[in-house]
Image 1 (cartoon, rainbow, N blue to C red):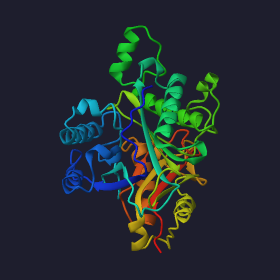
Image 2: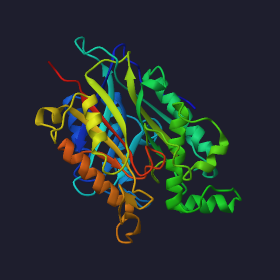
Image 3: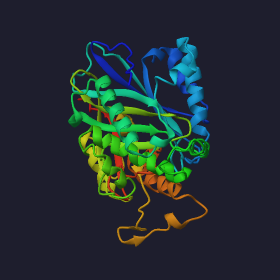
Image 4: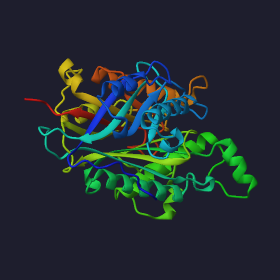
Length: 380
């Protein structure tokens, strides 16, 4: 795998800009920052965002936003958008149900000011794997590809080891009907020809890949049988999404490094279930933020971004009470859970600009998920 690096500053600082979008192709807020000189296009490392699509196989909003982003950056950098697609991870999740607000988070790496807070500070690394063969999707080959990309991203971030990794966001391809048809016609065996289950298998393989890279799982191909089978195996730091708009695994690693400076820190914790308000409070407390029961205005201003993974409990109950998400033929279960958990977390943060992604297979405890928050340290 070839690593790609923008020049690494002597004293790097991570910049995090959480920006609104009026529609899936709206990059006006980013264009304004570039015009004002607040942000340089050459410093952009990655983008993670929520679009207002359905989050399913046919969600076009993710590709629309990605195309618009690369066109904007390509114009500013004098480079072909197609080339930037091979360098800048743009990891999107569709579905802004309930109070969730469409938005995107731009991560940039710049030289820290002389008076910037010393590290260890929040660091980011990125990596893109090779174009994935259809027969590898949802299989141990994908697990290893993701693990390799995570290790590359850790090196890119100058993160010394797995213990310093706080949160890993991955975007994976999956077997679309057209890919499945082509592979079958060529006589190649597939992990699963069904597109919806293929998305789940790909997310599961991505989670195992993160776990493998972070030492949470052994590199044992026999564990392929545990994908979507043994939910006692999971990573507490993995967030995996799938989309038709990607052909390779895109990885963004966030953690802390002594080589980085600045005020940003990250905390991440597993959510035991969809009602785990305690996990939300725990993460905020680690960052010196206190919700009583909601963050006050000063603490809200310190929050730079929030990321959540969630899953409708496949056993059909939450804390012993029956839920109906899995049996609703009108509204997809993932839309139910995004709206429910998104409302819970937004109520605590006082902000609907939260990356809430469903499909948490092997990402946090079964029926739960995880929450990660980036915030500035409190100023004296």
